[in-house]
Image (cartoon, rainbow, N blue to C red):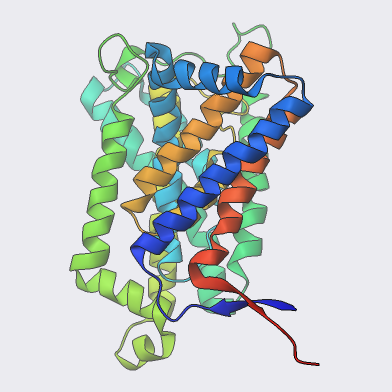
Length: 355
């Protein structure tokens, strides 16, 4: 018997749905054994997780709150991937977005009207993330440096820079030495929907997704981006400046990730603090991958990943699971779903060897 993977000639949308559905079913089966191993009744766990996420007001709020930055970071990674460029630096661009917008608040809060201040914060968050994103783009375009390595390493630089400020010049003197800035005024806070924690950042994310999708599908720039990703030689022959486009796309990708930082600080925490991101930038890579790098697909994949985040929190709170077991649970889900993607492009073939 010989077992191997054979490339599919055609991949259909229904085939992808079938593979994803099978992966989710496998997740339920594996999770069932996971719960048994850690001493939890699986049926009770599924019931509690489902009720806490979908049948409570807090669950829906937490779901949409966590979905918001994932929409931004997933879109950021997906945009670069349209050009076959791998932006692994959304986490650092997220942090540099928080740095730039916090600088605005610390210097102009109370001096500008609320609407003007928010717009200024948005612009600076995009500039902060965009400039940070343009660094690997520039190095890739002009020197051929691998963008995966540079964008990844810049994540640690950005996080260290934020820590430097929080433990130094930006630390609130009234915080009892906690590494946080002073709380922003209401003028620097994104409006919320009623008496909930869901804020306007969610609407901004949806609008941005629609704009990016329109640019990619309906404009000359979008065509050039997709053409360069599919066939760089054809793009070069048609007059596309690949160097310029590479820097531009990385800068735009970083700007979008910077907006994720803006929405998290101005919409939820109302101050910059240490560990402001719980891995939103890295999770954005998974969001983009599940969406097949399509901007509209980011909505569904971000929703799925927010369910994973919130369900892990529920398990930790309800059953007192250590954080290591929570990470293991998340890893099981992600490994199963991502691993199933291979069957959308390949099919399992079994042949009998003749003796």
